[in-house]
Length: 338
Ligand SMILES: *Cc1c(COP(=O)(O)O)cnc(C)c1O
Ligand code: SF4
Image (tube, rainbow, N blue to C red; front, side, top):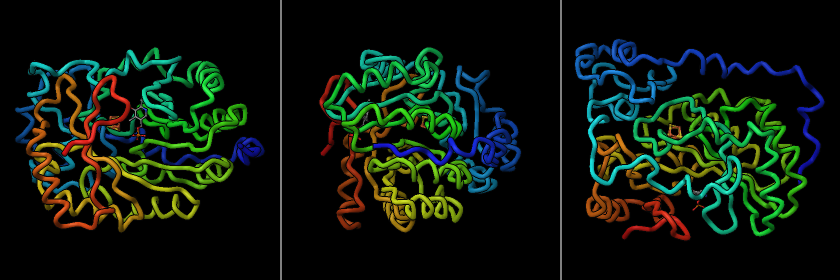
């Protein structure tokens, strides 16, 4: 059940400082390289943006090491010539999102939970992203005032968990989010609301008083699934944002993608889990890369991935070991590996 939201009573109290950080993101690869004193790499940049422009918040760039072309944060966002290579088996819709479309902006693949594409925008553009080719233009649930999405939920009483994803759902204004949540009372079977977001990592200022008030007004169990791939993404500001969420009763999980040269070694994976838990976040999934066109240079083989997980299990308590999974079209869940 959803209570009346405190937001509707205070229409103009928003400051939304986080939007400033959003607007100031670096959108030019050459500027990114020059901030990191890596101008020499500019010659290796691909021409054009392969339809997926560069976008990196400055706070994230400040966590990168100056002068290090192998920095694991940089490698997630820097365009590479390899993106233009065609690799057999790497496609546009690698995970069957288009056939799983159930209503406008709704993906329904798994029993009990439906995923809403709340927004097509992200604070950061991750070069390995499985949705880099997704036709967001037509598929944002918010664009239709949530009506089709809510109708779908109402006519599927077995769906008791709503997942807001995207893009990044926290790219929406809190007001827009409130527009959705204020209608969730019409879907009485819902028990859980889950947000899949990289914003608390990319722009921790997004977790502001207004957002926390919005979350407080929602009487469902709330889960935020963050997305961090490397321990160094989680600096003190991110830790503070996570602490704010936890103080408001939110369960925090993390999903990562296993990425070549970013986190494909036992030291990085163990340090990530340890750092996540310091921030009150439980490691949930470690995804094998979806076979999306333009991302093959990030691929780690299943055999390598499983061998890595054996090493990780040998160095961490069980609750800090994420589940290694691959998304396979038409299966009833993510497929566990190993
Ligand atoms: C991954 C995914 C989910 C969530 O799966 P969980 O195993 O519950 O985390 C739900 N819907 C869609 C469409 C997904 O891709
Ligand atoms: S934040 Fe998530 S959805 Fe957005 S580009 Fe990165 S991986 Fe893709």
